[in-house]
Length: 378
Image (cartoon, rainbow, N blue to C red; front, side):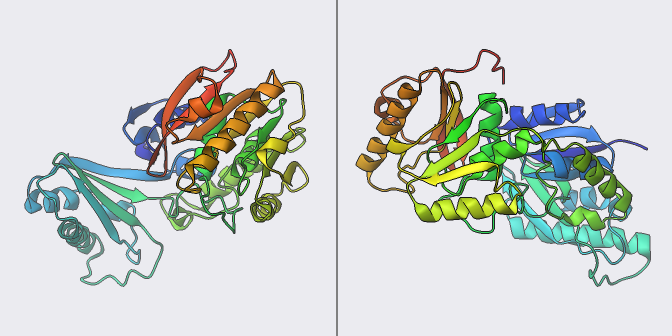
């Protein structure tokens, strides 16, 4: 069977992390671009990648790519692609689009042209003039960049950060994908304690526990591609069986989090219960000045409050100063903090050993790293 080209879409700044994840899963034939990693795989691998990738947003099937400076070129290029090889006669195929630095700048018009072209291709294949679209969903995206059109099918549906364990959210939740990325970058190892003193809804501790236990992050949710004939039920069942067999839930955990907001702690505890981790993560309602990490050596990994959540800059300064005092009091611990606060190092009262630009949603941040482990390579 010929290989497919799949695209893992990626938050800006995390391309190398997703590339690393894919290599760990065995997908070494890949190319990294801004905001995405393109890799070769079989149709059955769509199931594995959706279940296992912790830091990607979505898995797309790359249907084709071609120059498109006119609507005619867009129509003909789209129609030339083998849509019936994926979309059955009764499949639902909505079209979404985006355009950047391209002559075809009207997204609604491009979506309409692509829809018409796919319909014409389906008419030829299925010899009928009307499609009810009452079956499985095959979401099509047309992306125009510098007059090149890329056509894809979305296998994932809601973004991969939606693991299924977080039913409630705090005011400014950190996405699960970003939390996992922060842990990967830190090179934390499960045998060492991990503590988040601004844990909010508990995302960093929960993601750390899932990494420690090798829990496939997509194991508790469903995907549109589970109903796709081209992939088949057996591929999904095999991927889930592999994930269950890979669990290491006998690994001792030393993971905890605290937050000054008792309601946030309730949300964190509810999420931990939903993830099956309620007995293995300790959450407490405490201000950072009274945080109680346990162990001679460990990792502080956190996303401290900032202007978007707390408009009072003086309060932000106070909290970061207290976080710095906590770090120095712990002596041998490492510290990692994601923050957009420009004066973070001044408030923390120490320059970072390393900084890395990341985006928390659309907010540009720096990932401040202190006492980096010697084996940190990513």
